[in-house]
Image 1: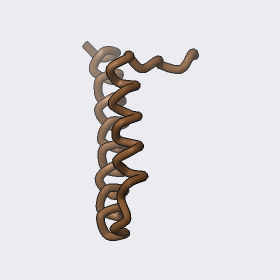
Image 2 (image 1 turned 60 degrees about the vertical axis):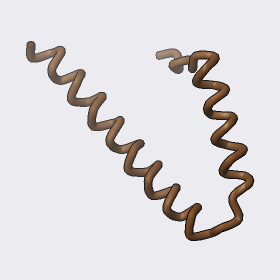
Image 3 (image 1 turned 180 degrees about the horizontal axis):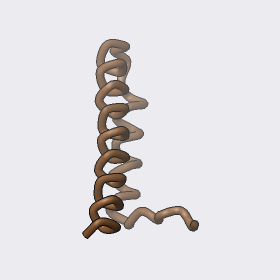
Amino acid sequence: MAPIELSLNQSFEVERLKREIDAQSDAEQLRHLAKDLLKAWFSEQANTQQAIQQQFYS
């Protein structure tokens, strides 16, 4: 399966956020961000799995 390509706008947004992370010097802020991203990643996986299951059982 080929990887999903990001749109041009998504690529720019990723780059903007990467620069924002690089500019951050507050370790507590970075920990909070990492936890938020981890939760978002697993939520996305759960949503994808649920969508796949709904498609198969509908």
